[in-house]
Image 1 (cartoon, rainbow, N blue to C red):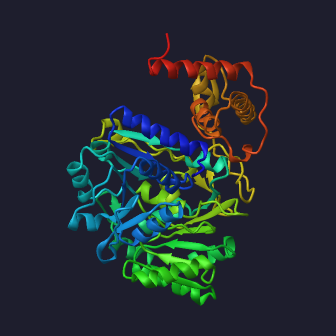
Image 2 (spheres, rainbow, N blue to C red; image 1 turned 90 degrees about the vertical axis):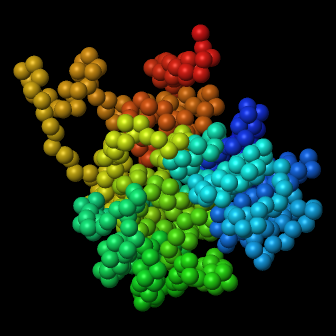
Image 3 (tube, rainbow, N blue to C red; image 1 turned 90 degrees about the horizontal axis):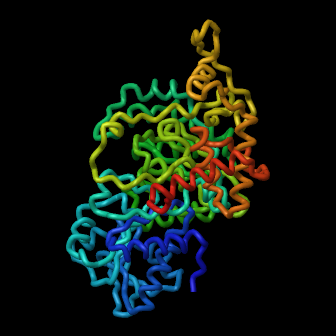
Length: 497
């Protein structure tokens, strides 16, 4: 019998509750490291115990074998529905199928369906759900950000956040290095955008220049030369150029792309997995379904406006492995400055394809900056770089003339809004954080509660360096604040008063 972590059991319980409530189309948002295959296997085992077969649908042909191996390793009898490799038996507890084969041949009967990487929803997926509208469907995704998922799924079950998985030790903590935003803008200034994403042909001209490729090598040599590394490139020419430069520097490297045959692709990944190759460059191949936990560095050499793609790519380096406490992200495309640090990602509600006026105008606030000494990405509120220790340059304060005296802009706002109260200092925020931590420990709250409560109170995340510090006895102020939040939450759910 599979042993589940508490959060995996909670996800399954929530899905079952959703089904009892009448939701036949549900999304399970399971971040990298949450054990998506384990959760899927437990649900399939439960169905098999009742004599029911499941269908596990993948969106790429090359993922069929990988999914089948994982599910077989979980003790399931697995059939395959995929072109010439189809192998089915009446005793199959689960059938792994490619959506391409289902589109051309149809599907085998099943009691429930799981759609892997549900954020990549094809027309064939939608037709499948419409044709089999009485069969429960669970869509699995780490990034269910597709704008119209709410049209096809009626319930969202959220697993633990990336931050929670980091705090609990199931993911490595990312340490991100970026070029300065102004330098990237010089490169991207003339790159065309279509359909909300950079045009690849235009990106290729901008990023396939020898000096940029050389920068990748020098940066890697200074920050991650001893780590197994994957590189996300713009196109095939770019991937080959980066690979060639690693080879020229004496580093064992290989590249793969959509033109790489199945057998060659497996051999390349096997050599990388075994450590015979240190660097693997790619184009649109490694972002989904690639699982090599000892990858210690990811190089982002492809700018993207897609937060989903960004989170998927970074996630390839975050998986835990013995002795691995952090993952180095070398973000030459400044995607982090565009999308925020991966540990801040929170799965939003499902959307039905429409946008409110506020959403159309929404722009990401300037929360991050880059250390001018080492290039590490720093969060708002940090006085010094968390990597090299360099102090953050102080910005000149803006002032307002208020009641005949000059005061700092922040102080003027806080007095106007807080009736004379001054802006909390770093020491005040640290005391609040430790008190929240003590409150959470006394009441069995998850680490993620501390993180989100701090953001709710101060409008930004707590400093990363505070995380190892022990909690303190909760102050009366923190207790009262937490109780007010509990009451507000209960009222919102109609369970108070």
